[in-house]
Length: 234
Image (tube, rainbow, N blue to C red; front, side, top):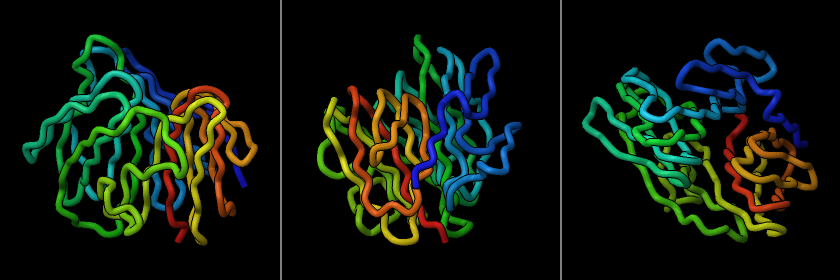
């Protein structure tokens, strides 16, 4: 089953520097039908104005993945990590026993990104941060894993959960596939373009809850980019 959530149906928040859309309940937006999917708790679509951002603030016991779509985000945290993550690249922060971090757009243009929170498999992991560049050319075959805690993806950036973040660009009329094992589900968002997932249309910045599907075929109707999180349901 594929349950589409169009972009204009998402929760929203905006102020003078942030325009956010929430795929799941978050902060002041609460929808009991949208409380997450397995350990996936947050998927925010954020637009951050130039020379602004999230000032230092704390987290603990959460795996926080940032997928930068346009511009760049600069990270600094309380355990000494600093870095700049550009469009198409990904950073992972393990909040673990506790970390304070800032995420700033120090560019002269707005930055757009996905902020994805996944609950860890246990409390009290060591906090940490990592960022990695990924190829920007269109992908083929299976949708590659960028971040994962699954044994099947040893080359992906690691998280403390049996979940994985897959993503990539897809050329017009090309397809990629993704297999869902028994007892697992997925949430996918079209970062750019428009696609069909097993024949179901998903437009730009729309999301889809995917359950009870063994194999996904994702066909790009135009140059597209998709991000998909594969999670256990129990």
